[in-house]
Image (cartoon, rainbow, N blue to C red; front, side, top):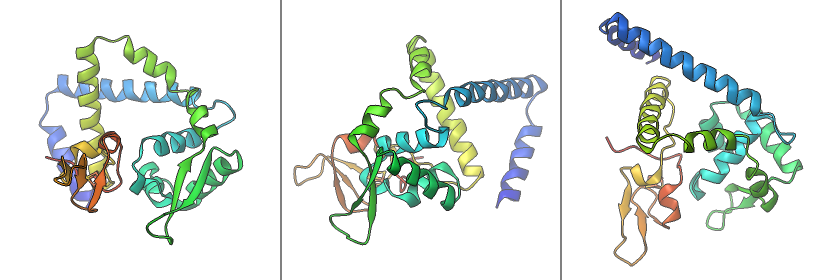
Length: 206
Ligand code: SF4
């Protein structure tokens, strides 16, 4: 699958002009530089970068996706690394495990109140503040462009998109029984806040 994808990529890449190739390399180099900057800032408050990523994931993921398996798929790391990460966060009392009310064999993860407080000092805050200084049109273009780029890279690696619920093919607005939204895949009622959350089962509308 990967060989097929990479040969398609190389065919597409060979059809673009030298100027466009230059632009593409420059964009990739800018993303790399930004990534390095974020990486050096990500050791904060005694947490490793991956531990911050896990806290952010649990803050953004919907209730169906707050599991160790989904977190492993999101981070693209080994089960062992994610298990160690979660253990460290539990010892620091930032994350806790809860038995699912509907299926007692399932263990869900949740941020503790302390974990939520930690996120107020998220090292990403500086970058969020810098983004907020950009004009609205630039922010919109950046968001659309980066989403497309991430989606292309995840597709090439056969990885799940973990997109927002409201952009999913199974998302139904306004359930007839009076509830706000409904998931046609999981047959579950969704709250307004669920619409913005990310989901392991998300299938983007094309
Ligand atoms: S509608 Fe899609 S994204 Fe939302 S909960 Fe269902 S499967 Fe997940």
